Length: 455
Image 1 (cartoon, helix red, strand yellow):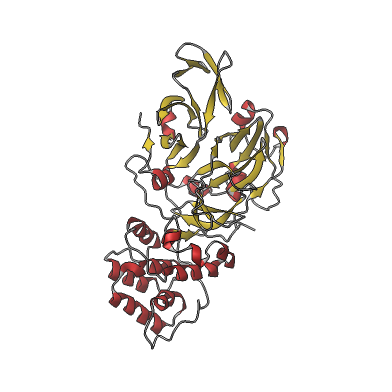
Image 2 (cartoon, helix red, strand yellow; image 1 turned 180 degrees about the horizontal axis):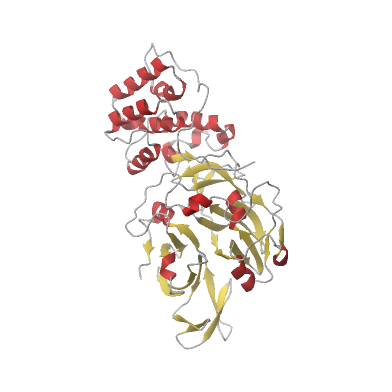
């Protein structure tokens, strides 16, 4: 099996949706929504005329959905969209989705949840687990249903790795020194998860150092975030998978107990039974670095085996290579590019009741940055070439690099570990959780409520 995400071009769904009333009779809003994909030519024309005459933009969300899945009727759908919105993006589904994101004041018709559910269940009937009618009403969701996008795969079409096989570093002959890995260290349990493998799976569920965790890797937004999955008030740790849905080009993961959808970037449930639970997954530190650098610093590390139980091409530079090399997004997301380009990398910290981003390029020629977040002084150690950034608390000290050593403003030398900075007298400064991400994801989820380093 070869895993691919289908791009956003015209995707055709065959077969009728549900029987609808005869168009010789009065057309209903639901009839008109279904018409692009299920009606005869004359019925479709009558439906578009009815939508145009009615003149309300509340039908736009359904028409944009229909535009994605209908090749032959795109021009007529686009003409109707222009008539009810005053905008003209012709058959460009991507641009219509951006317009929709820019206009949250337009509330879709009350029948839209029914229609959207019908469409997505035709892609995969298992989507019913996520789209129960009682959970997809606007007042029950934390994101907009009209912006939930099919990502091109079915439920678990990108399969998670659950307690996968690990091998010793010396046995990992398949890895090149410059291959990137996610490095994790918890309570002395040190592990590496190569991006060339994780790009095919985007999720692992593990117990590392006695702590149940999940790494949620959204290839589309360039972020791998390590979450604790043992949540207060729940008897068992949450176990996560990939739903097949996206929101603003970010994966929506799901937990296997309640089938709630979660925003991968924020660690919060956004659709389903857990929406009002108040749960926000806590982060653990994770770093991206080269295999050579990771094993040199952590010679006792374990690393993923190629024996994952799935048949994939785990070669270097295979998975999503074209996407990573392109400045473009695969799926729609509105981005403010006045500070950074949409796929520039940033290092994100969301701790101490605040959020702050450091552009990866800020570490070019400057491996150490002394900064702060919400009044908490931080030391950030970064490497542009390996895409690596680690953050630590620093209290009232200021650090400088000196011939490969790390010195504080008193001249004392500190040692850098995965868990903490360690001083000459045994004092420690704890690691602070953070992760790499594309700028567009930060801008979409935290842009108005966070700060960005510009030093």
